[in-house]
Image (cartoon, rainbow, N blue to C red; front, side, top):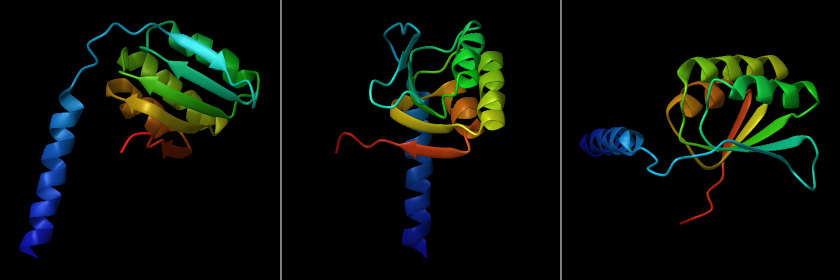
Length: 120
């Protein structure tokens, strides 16, 4: 029982410390449709006040999966995107990282969620 409690405490501390790290480089917003599957959108960058409008255009055009790498950004914009993801039943795949408003809104808003483990 003590080992199990210690394990959960360790995980909680690790996640708390890990989530406090900020991406130091400035992220620019980048949207790219996948070359092999036109229903997959790649989004890399910060979430800004302009991101929801751009994202909704892709969702309305038939995108059903969004591959994300984002350090987060504007919370209100993230909430708007998360609601759009839920409405369009979007699948989210985190490619590298998804922090802050990305994790709190985009990832949570998705109906299916995956995290690519590319490094061991």
